[in-house]
Length: 68
Image (cartoon, rainbow, N blue to C red):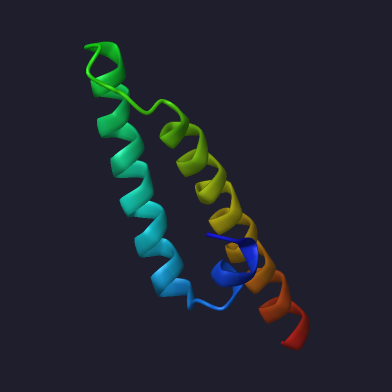
């Protein structure tokens, strides 16, 4: 997903996606260690998406702080 798409989601949706991505990264790590992982690039993409989510969450926090 693109950062713009993450910014459009609510905080709850972002937290759920982050949890799901973290679980998938965890499972991919196990597959990688056992030699069953075929698409290693998927781990990199998921890590970037988690970083994008964290950035979007941080932006929402700062915007909420400015309006208060």
